[in-house]
Image 1: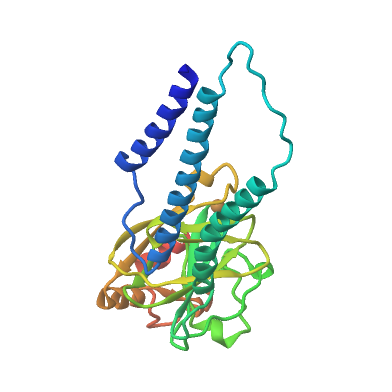
Image 2: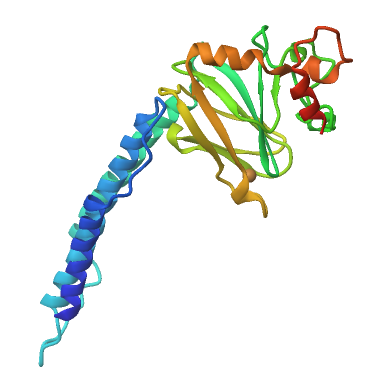
Length: 281
Ligand SMILES: [Cu+2]
């Protein structure tokens, strides 16, 4: 009897905790409201199954408790019961998977007008590369990485010369513009994750993974690494600032291109001297 009661209390407690809990996701700042709806659907389905199973267990513990002289019946097969359980389980699993597949389809279908932004992860910092005026990122190769070329951009590729390099600093993005995040790692597995964007993806050395999203509100958001990547994993943080178009443009103008960072110092080059010395340190 006591055990049956404890089981019922576990169900009531779990449901109350979910409904009354002050902890919930941080407010969303991207177009991926679907991700939240999918998670909510999963909560409801798993919550309902959990409650049903535990309550049934409580019922059985009470109903079939020990009584002098009572014997259990042996019934190893029940076609009818098994068919019902199979059907209900199949419907439950499909209800959890179908929305996920639908959302995933959108997650990897990048709109044509999305701007590319490259994220480069390394132990334990984030760097970024934006296409310059030509709108194209140059090719890159991890073998080309050196202190002058921390992202391994191919110096032979004309598309790469005007690429904007943001090394170990904050990334800015313009609001309401779709961006395709190209994810690269130059050492071990990392995972680019901004909780407010509801999007994340593993970064695998030797390949470029991606996702896309539209930032929907301005603000400062924290970047986390969501893949245990070594002793500095917990400190692998960064900042993404979603700006108005105007703020974004003025930030962009202060950044250095690959050509400016690697080429011989040119008179009148657009490099801020204070920033150039900071880079050389
Ligand atoms: Cu990492």
